[in-house]
Image 1 (cartoon, helix red, strand yellow):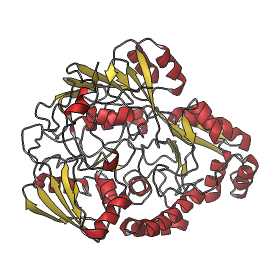
Image 2 (cartoon, rainbow, N blue to C red):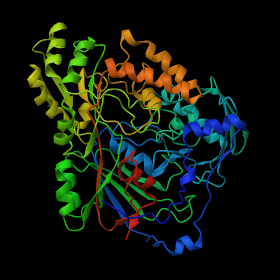
Image 3 (cartoon, rainbow, N blue to C red):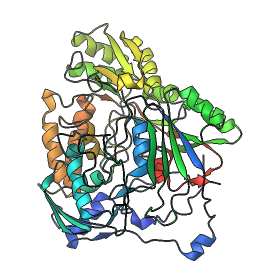
Length: 541
């Protein structure tokens, strides 16, 4: 585990604000949220090692196929995420402890007391990779593109209260956004890595089609071969003084875990995502390589389509959840590098209901439920791919556990291109992966009829109230009342949802010991400390 500290990290403990704190301050008197200060003091700099400049950082990422693309506001697989982070940035960000931090493109954000009107002012002098200066018109266009239903980028799920016709330009750097309702989650949504700011006209024909494909980030795209690799050159006009440190970043697809590990051990790459848990000791034991372990709320669920037999019967879903021996899943599928789950996501969220009883394996009850539902001796295919830690391994362990309940699970391991191809979101029984999010943004992304990635097709007919509860929770500024609504939603998913959330995997990233700037204890949303916060806070020692 790395204990290197990024000497350029200006984060102060007080800079991380919870959503509730932000809204309380807003209600108290029209809070103005201003971006943090600039350079560290000379005294601080004197006791910190100066980062070295130069070099090409080669990153091996899990998965990838000929269907890879690069877009500042849309992703499907991990390689898409890794490439987005090179060149696109958001208005606000999450800090290392998963708190909102105003260290993005926004210099100032001002909500009114009701939280239904938000004024956003961007920093001065920021340029896109093509030399165009960032203006309020770009912010308006970015928000409008993000929620454009025809483009289907998923933004309409994250920002359902955003009215694209009510974004007013106040001056060259300021926009006023009038929402359809108060929104307690808008800052969480604006901090999602897919909410990137793009120039006017960017990708109007669809995702991955922007020409030029430019953002404001630390690296600009120079070449891209889908399914193979991309190259990104240092942005000489980057707005953060002194950053980034690498001359170039190269991102290489490795669908095969063994090939990715071997590439790291042999020095062909400088870092890799998703070290297989069984290989952690190998990477740590090899001269010159290490594993960075970060606490995470990332999860690789087993997904059941609630609108399709046999899972349109809640008793079958309940039985499948009772089949699972969760500690064994974590121990065998993740080699112990993770935490036991309880069929709910977003445990980092302050509104997560930790009081719900931990679900345990109960084979007798599972068999009883299956028999009552008419599915005694069920045989079913479970589709999976090597998209994230624990997907394939979890599927295999579950299949073994299911035998005790008389269920025959045929695990079908597919290549990434097939799994995430035309049938993605249509599989009846499958695995998938999700990174850390707070609960309501995660619901927007994957648990509503309007969600872009609703693989379970939740809610079922018996739980349509879930949607109205979500709509109420999103516009409820009072934290206590919102938490009550969220807990009611979570109880529904806990009782009858389509996810088997058996665990949360520790983020395991392999890296060459010469790589510096990585921090231990980072509550991981994405690998390698958010890919080195866009590859700008890491360097070669």
